[in-house]
Amino acid sequence: MSVPNSHPATPSDDLRTIELLTQQALDAAQSGDWDRVDACYEARGERLAGCRMDRVIAQRLLAADDQVRAAILVAQAGLSSQLAEAAQTRRHLRRLRECQGQGGMEHGSIHHEA
Image (cartoon, rainbow, N blue to C red; front, side, top):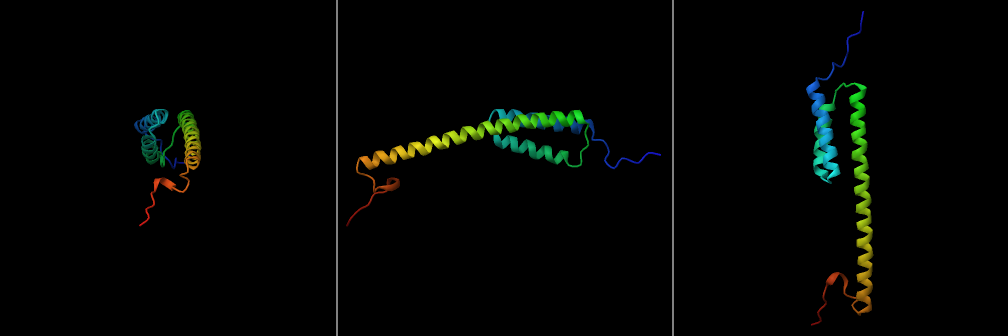
């Protein structure tokens, strides 16, 4: 006598939708469309709740997730680099203002005496 399965198999249409959403998230990550990545993962998460799939499909999803994660790390590194460059530029501009005798004028404000 077999034990009834507590989680019925997920219909193949749902699995195709989950894989499509995963691919769309990967495409969006590779193009830097982070809002779309978020929307795809949110929709995928709703479909994955209570979902059963075989190991092959799960491994494909995880491989795509790893690629999305790699795109995120590249984007974070790029942003960190740009932030560091912006901070260096701000320091350079502050030193230039100080050299020109404008050190007291912070953030472009002008002081008037009556």
